[in-house]
Image (cartoon, rainbow over all chains, first blue to last red):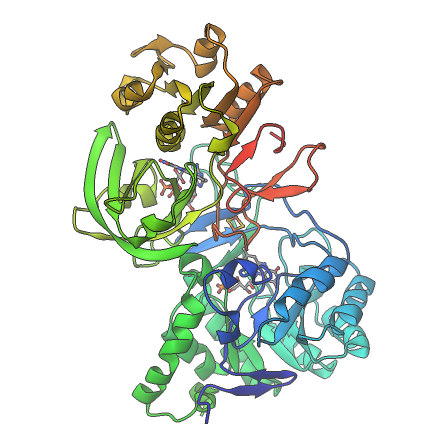
Length: 303
Length: 258
Ligand SMILES: Cc1cc2nc3c(=O)[nH]c(=O)nc-3n(C[C@H](O)[C@H](O)[C@H](O)COP(=O)(O)OP(=O)(O)OC[C@H]3O[C@@H](n4cnc5c(N)ncnc54)[C@H](O)[C@@H]3O)c2cc1C
Ligand SMILES: Cc1cc2nc3c(=O)[nH]c(=O)nc-3n(C[C@H](O)[C@H](O)[C@H](O)COP(=O)(O)O)c2cc1C
Ligand code: FES
């Protein structure tokens, strides 16, 4: 028996650990360091219809126990992602979750339709929560009705289950979660980054060229955990939790709060081996907790 | 191959005001190939500060498996690094990026190496390699002021060396370009690392010379995955953008739009 295996819509995960979108590119760089087949899944960088060159630099700034980023969804565009990046990833035994972004509903639909046909794409992650682009992204994620409409439109064309990535930059995240569940979402991924800012103390001007950026890393974990806990109570579809996960204990916390699997983002920059390390440490942690299977963790806090 | 290793500090001293020279020992040194590559250093095992710091490799000794970095203790991370003692371990990821192409200079040729401030360190290993090959380097090293000048003698042992300070407290007064303007010797290629303004000045001064410039940009991963360190390219370049961490940090003159 594989004590770490998790089954959620579209995804047979050999373990519940995967790198988060935007923090792992399309895997090539980390493949030089370890075998990507060790991972539960891979969430690839946001893919848009056309090539995007992203925002001006500086695009990142360090903050207390965290960082801000305003990459601006830079990616090579749908065609190249399918023909080159996803093709290349086929050599690994690992399901891919394709992060889909766009400006208009039609963009999302078009990307979803094509990318969901790729052999190794087992689920989509609708990015309605990117805080770093002027239109699209977060504008879809802050209004329950708009989020639901987009979810339904993408569900209608996708060949694989659709997960919706929620933004923490809302008053009531539960409302958005319930709306996308009702619209047919197969799962939820959460959270994306929190909008933040850092100023250059000398000049008084923002450090990030874009002005604001998305906060991630250990600093956001308490917020993310609370939101996963909240949403888990309100929906019955599975949640892939993320936000500041750096250690195996963080994984235990997110799953206890109700996540069925987790994603690791910023921590990959701090320790490029963080994902395989956590995977290796999980069984021992289960022993310590007296649990047989990792799924026994899911929703412990609510029982 | 890129490796992550906890390397041991074998030497660590302040060589100029707030400028530290640190020598580390470990297997990772086997992987170090070209001068101009850098390492990504985690200065603390806690979340503070969170991100790694990119620092150039200043010299490599394959026999002893030691390498040296030279850094300015300025912000949170580098100030913390400065408190490390001999025997302490430092988490190093590297070597990263592509360094200066030594093959672009042929034996017997004269080249200039132009460094500004904390851009000077990678030029030291570069100069050693060029000299080994029979290339004649001329070094032009710019600093703010006398207190922060370092490695003048070491560069002097490798070839003609001019130091210039902005305030004129040591060597010539002015900028590296002041010295370059008065340089009598012709050269085939220039190699440079320093502040962006200096890189711009170099490209403008020698539009027809072969040149290689090392760039700095804020980084996340240091590996090419996060798109933090992207630079726009010029119209002549085939690709729309380059990543400083994995495509650079060294680029031929004219590639990056500056
Ligand atoms: C390829 C490369 C090679 C470098 N080589 C050297 C070297 O040999 N010696 C040396 O002293 N410095 C070098 N630098 C600059 C060095 O990375 C920064 O001085 C250092 O990161 C500042 O960290 P801090 O803790 O002092 O500052 P903080 O203000 O605490 O830094 C905050 C954040 O900004 C980043 N940052 C700040 N300044 C820079 C900068 N100039 N470039 C990139 N990121 C920056 C830090 O990495 C950190 O993530 C190099 C930079 C690059 C990109
Ligand atoms: C540099 C960077 C780039 C990101 N790019 C994307 C992206 O393209 N699409 C997306 O949905 N989320 C993106 N994110 C958000 C992460 O996937 C994740 O939701 C967030 O960072 C919280 O997790 P963490 O604290 O573990 O990083 C990005 C985050 C970072 C730090
Ligand atoms: S620092 Fe991540 S791509 Fe260069």
